[in-house]
Image (cartoon, rainbow, N blue to C red; front, side, top):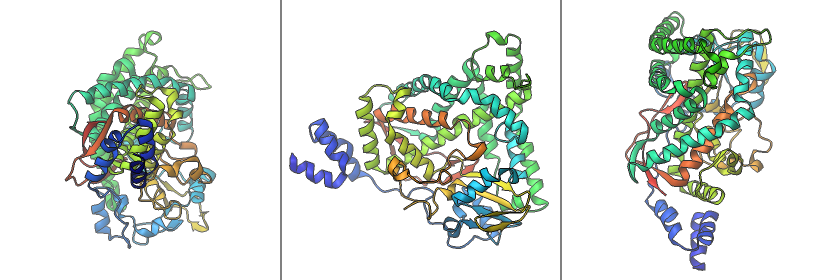
Length: 493
């Protein structure tokens, strides 16, 4: 037995010895680690091909826009603090030095409002919600929304999150071990359930039936590439996209306005959910949100509140399926801390490796791969480079999270790079899955708590094994998703 411990520890690391000594035998290790390690066929991770050595032609860039255009960004952008492509129409620069990002998003943020095209695009979907509004309107909405996402409120959502995850245990149990699922669709389903339980209570089912399809259709209709930045052609294409989005949302908008009108008749007895909070909220002058403003924030929260977490969790399962050592370490933590019981809100802080797995998945596959396109209002200087007024400034978490000067072996899945020891001294502007600065995502703490509770609940009981023979392609439409989903087999541990 001691010889087996020594041999297997050499093959599989510390978790092998831990599992052997704690569980008291070889059987657990053989079933969980040895068999999986020997039968696993390496799968080339999606989106991990080396960046092109040289900039692509305009034609190839236009074609790249149909998938994940960030994969066409040349290698120089991953090595330089500021990259200024020469072939792009107009003046634009990419900033991926943490101090440069700080300059744009914090120190001189007033000089870098959102790009006009980006704002029009977000307004078509979200009206004047937090994702699209600017200036005083944005500040007013942010202040009104803040109480729903403060630490006490987020902690209060934990039981509903845990209950939704437990309901999924029963869902995955029904087909039997080894059932094949689209893990992207499964994560969409659980996060929609959570956002409805926590935010929209009794009106949830009607919203799910309309909001989910509308948001998916709107994203599918929005393909942006080089042609969208060209004079004359660009504005025409944008108007067509806006008209398509307005048509897609017409029925959903009518439903939300009907819900608002119904609650206005007896607001005091309405469910104490986010919709009621928005309708009751008042600013310092005693002014509340209009029905149109409430609609915009409902759509924003429905989209941002489940879509980003769903895609993050999709890639968590995908990465774990390809990295058995990290998967085993996750299982060891869950077994040691939870011992088979359902996790609760207070367990989130006790599961540091679980959180690291999620953080690393969001580094490799950022849910929102483009932080923002900004336009310089006045001349400025970023990292020693003169930036003229009118220059388009692009910051992408896709490049930032893989920049050669910020991350060692950036294409490698390594959750422990987010350990306290290895995170010490890292700029907060080197890792931005939720943005940064004044407009940092209001729901960041909500999303992380949700993700940890989902993973802790499901990974205690199941593994997800990648179905062979798939060509997994990435598609960027606001969020970064696997095109066509990812087929996996859900197996009992």
